Image (cartoon, rainbow, N blue to C red; front, top):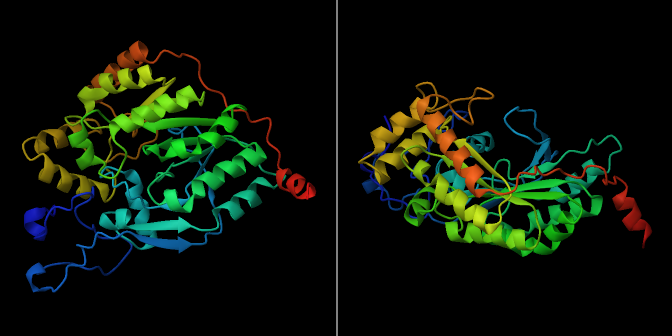
Length: 360
């Protein structure tokens, strides 16, 4: 049974994508609210975001998936206050003992020693240079970054070692680091993808409640282009019946702003995200919930979840094919640049830290 507003007995959590805490599959016990009226205070009602500091042993993940075109990923934060209800990264929060639902948005794990570990890795003679993706899991420019500046410090480290770095974000906070991004861009060491899922602000506020507005994100592309920082637009995820009809408008605006590339994925609802998204869909779009759900299933062989390499990101079937066709037509029309960006992997210096120390 899918939990809804009627079955949980709680009001809609404005400013949050998830509307419940799904069970953690790794835990034998869990908290429930069977009789809300009998509680003095609901433990799910708290809007406060909790910051949890950790000290991991490793920070860089080697990516071998054929669906992703990069070598490494690095996530300074786990969990994301942006609250995008469809986010596949929600499932990873269960490894930390939390729920993929509201916990994912309210309990933000900060990897305190990220710079120390990054420097240690880049200083190794055996290190093989490939672009490191920031935000492969959760957004590196989410709200907590404004105060902690871990992403900025990562960029400073990449600049020092002359190591290529790729970024994907949906937050205008990235403009704070134009000074570093410009210097990286001068050496072909950085590329940015800005995630823009549509043009309808009312839908965005429900789908991605704590992200920058669509207009602000297009403004990010415009600013990055002005500073000659290579950037593109990522239309992801495309949800049939929700935002697929906005693909041409997104690419038109992004192309006009200066995007030199574009990518897309079709929504897939793996693990706990299936329950979270269906609950969200019923509460916000009851008139079309069944139709949207059916169309998502049509894109994944009759299911909403898909883990098959090479298929899971693009989908299959007639609806997926029509979405891909619309995207390709719009991309060819509005994204002018045809030159694929190439990272500079030859300037890397693993002795950068020693050289810097020698100056003193």
